[in-house]
Image 1: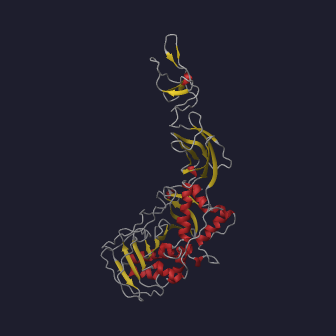
Image 2: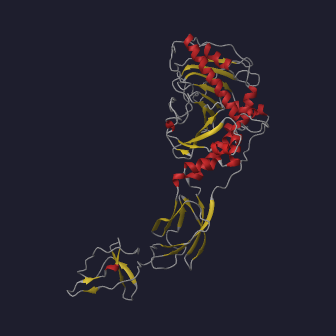
Image 3: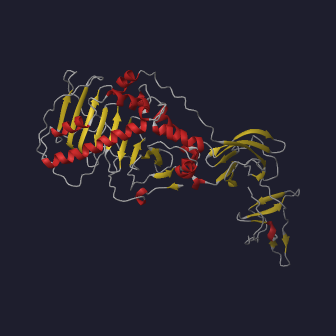
Length: 507
């Protein structure tokens, strides 16, 4: 099942502004920011992360006071990390959002066949993947929609390898990048960032694991077949390799390779693939493997050593002393909030807690059922692949409208747009006879006719001598060979509208 574009039809009540994440955005001088250096470190100035801080909850009422002055808050220990600081923003001019609005954006959505898994009594871990949203090209994955045990909806952003973020249905977000862990709201208010210098490298040391080197099995998704064409030119001669504009056979946008040519027969054998590496389906599958599977479970995260699951697992085990609700709340409390603002902060921090919890449930190996070797999302995909095929289901559903694919040929000056149309790779491909126009050969035609003089002395050719849609006549040379031409020596010869006839292509 596939739902393409407008996710707005799914449900109502969700509001999110679509802003593409950007980096190196300067902090406005009007922002109220406090910075806390943890007790085990000497104080140092730390700039706001180069990545825009995340999304978050949309608070309907606002009592933000722009004249509030930021004050310091008590430091907290960071037992396992060095160079840790914390910043809080009561309001920001811009902040992180998903690359496309899940409800009103222009993404293309592919649904997973989870009902089929349940019908096979498969155990589906929580949170599981409900759908994948792609860019409008149907190739580049943007985010996964996750459903938790309470059927809550969250969006896992996979659009950028430099960070991972989780966004709830209100637009609240937690984002992990090379600078630290960032929490924010959809309205860009009450953002908190915990900054750790060299976070990925410190997590790599704490994890005790060697660098991830990949190793994910690459499936062969193309189906190969050999296609035979018998190629002859306009004179009936076998087409040789020397023809100007060498024959090029394609299936969809993917070129076939000629593997055998019998020039005496004009027999050309091509090795073709279906749907082909250039097809939307195969490009989508490669992107799913690279931007989802490898990004989440295999490749070193952010260019450091551990994979993402190891990063989240290690962060969960080593950051409890500063990555907690009290730490987030106190950073904002100490900025002179009103009672209304405190209540808003309490609600916002509750959302932040939930986001961090769901991110751990999704990607931490500690949360997976024993033996804890895989995260819940990886367990889900492994379960899915045991019964179906994740990437094929997603991409074939998404690109079902691309079929059938045309088999096209370009040779000489001939362009045949559709020798055949294919919905699948043929098991026993039938050969095709194709006449191509060789620009180096004479203007041959079939069944040359002789001109005749009528009783009144006019010069005429029979109707079947006219070559349809060309303005040419198929006559004869002095030696009796058929030849197509536009000029006649009959002074009073006038070209007449030819009758429809078989296709004979002149020079």
